[in-house]
Length: 295
Picture 1 (spheres, rainbow, N blue to C red):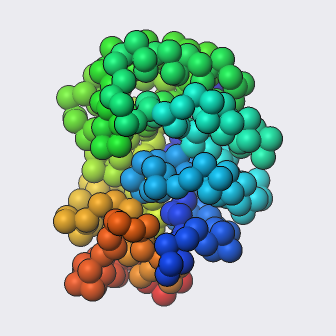
Picture 2 (cartoon, helix red, strand yellow; picture 1 turned 135 degrees about the vertical axis):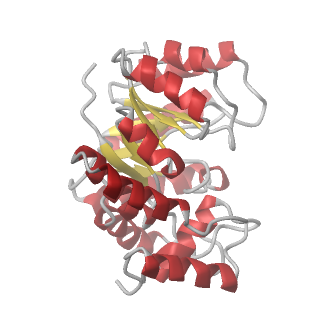
């Protein structure tokens, strides 16, 4: 296994216009903003909530993958989302991503008809055989199904599966992964902002979170790497105060981006954006924790 990626991996927020259509002209700014918020790599329409991937058509996803790769200009690796319930579409997305120059892939189990473990195994074995690129195994029970620890450990024996993005926030589960899959060299484990400090202190590879929150996650990562426990805990506590309660991650992240001067629109209908009060709370949090609201 050659797993070199560590640090902050950020999904590029998908911009929509007032009509709810993908705003391809705004992808460049959204991508560059993601990189400026300390991303070591970016994800192109691969995450289920932050990037609203299930609301997008296949052609929209292709256009966004291409635009994201173009906008990075080679500055950071791009991991393209290829998940879909149909393997023929998965194959199409893999082939397209490879042609466009993606550095890796991001994949979660199929959604819709709940897959059992044999289906999930066949699905990821198919992806493994279809590419030579490194793959993130993405566990997001919000959008698809929760994969068991033992299943994920088995899947990480596949040749191209190098990284895990674990979104469950279940610390007992995360601790098991970090103590077995990660330590045994089967995968580099990435988690989410809620458990950033704990993950990194146990040797996890990094954090996957959207901008501009990613800039604060970077502070946790750098402090842990420097052995500065007090600074790491301070940054984690600031992350914990991010006022996202009552919102889904994409709505909160988009409100934060707007406060930072990078408007990417609201979530695609029927999903709702932040209320005026929620936007004010997020802008206040960003000022309080030292994230600029006028860049």
